[in-house]
Length: 122
Image (cartoon, rainbow, N blue to C red; front, side, top):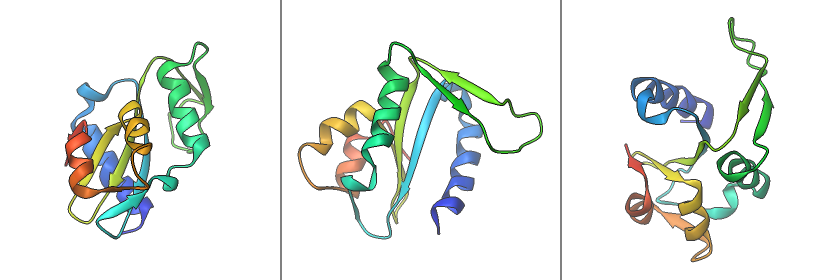
């Protein structure tokens, strides 16, 4: 399953669980093994998530989806920010702060450890 196919699956999951995820952002990653390198989440992606989570100014994002009814811009500030990783056995949703703390401990994140630190395991 490619990341864009996982994105469709994740979108359906979010819509079914939306009340607990209001004002949240998600960076999706996928691995075909039992672990994923922390380097898969690029530094600018972490920085962007941290700006949404903790930045004084927030983040203004241009929406380029082309979906009917979708706004042109979205402004996010003090929202939740998550890294979502699809493994072979399921996916985990990890808070950006937890992800950053774990990143300093090893080079990769295994499925069992991801399950231990995740906000949600699906």
